[in-house]
Structure formats: structure tokens, C-alpha cells
Image (tube, rainbow, N blue to C red; front, side):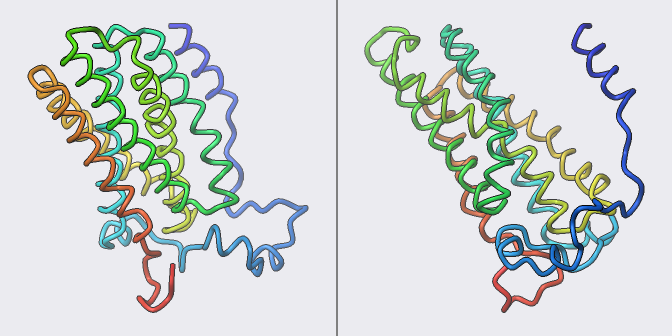
Length: 242
């Protein structure tokens, strides 16, 4: 109830900027021609409408990336909670939130797709570390709560398990423009419903074979890590390296 009240109060005072608003202290010509900015954050070729975005290959690709990574992110909470290592679970959840701010700042400097691929790679690494920790505990007949690999896996999975959400939202604006970005991102974000189903399937598999489930999760996280650098701005010729 407290969280709902705080969010509701913040939303009540939130005001959206006027359409086509531009900050007065930024020269639009210099901003448009800034080569360093264009290398890290290239702009969409036009302002896509929702129907136009849906017809591209890029939007389904973004939805698939979110489905894979979102499923792994939810599954990690279940896995770490199942070990009984509550400290590791708190660390996982805390880094899940804190990593978002760090990733957004890093993406402004190094490029969204590059940072997003790194985030997915961290998520995949977390699954491997967690799988080794759980498997070692199973072989030795002990709990994995005190295993350093469990904590390292929680760190990697936490940093990668939340940061991709704001990065994908920023990437939607970069690929499709800003005017209809909210509607387009809503379609991409709706893939989280499918991610929840996939996470539930992974959790069921983990009941019998936790190591195998975590390795499957690692593969699911590795797929977006490999695919992200290949995302292209819709409308650009294939010969242009974006």
C-alpha cells in the first residue's frame, strides 16, 4: 500500500513536456551534426508510427530479446530464493534495480546496443555461475548458501537482470523515433507476459534438474547478447553500418 501511494503521488505531479519540445540551451544544428553522439546514439531515419514499426523485423526482434531476458530475470529470483540464501537474494534484487541507472549512463557514452549486449552477457554469465554453485551443492550434499559462486552469480544476474529494461526503452526511441515511442515500447514490453510463462516453465524444470534449467537459462540470455549487435535501424540500407 505504501509503495502504491508513493507511486501514485509521483504520477499525480508528473507533467509531460509539450509536443516537439526542445531545450533552449542546446543548439539543434550542433546536436544534429555531433559526430561523437551519432556514433554512440544514432537517430531513427524517420518518426515511425505503430503500424509501421510492427511491419519491420526490428520490433519483433526486440520483443523476442525482452522475452528471453525477462524470463531469465524472473527465474533467477526463484532459483536464488530456493537456495535459502536470503542475503544473496537481497543482493540480486538490489542490483537488479541499481544496475538500471548505471547501464543507462554507460549507454550514453558507449552506445546502447553495445552496453545492452554486455548486460545480456552478464545475465548469461550469472546463470553459469549459479548452475555451478547449485550443482556443487547437489554433489556434496550441502546447501549452496555459503558458496562464493552463488554470490558471484547473484551479482552478475542482478546487474544483467534489470538493466535491459530501460536500455530497450531507449533503443526503441533510437530505432523508431520519439513521437510514438511510448506506444511502440508498450508493444515490446507486452512480451513480458510471455516471459513470465517461460520463467514458470524453467522453474518447473528446475524442480527436477536445477542445473539443466540454469544452463537453459544461460542459453536464453546468450541469444540476446549475440543478437543485439546485429540490430539495425529500420529504413537504412544494408550497406550502412548501423
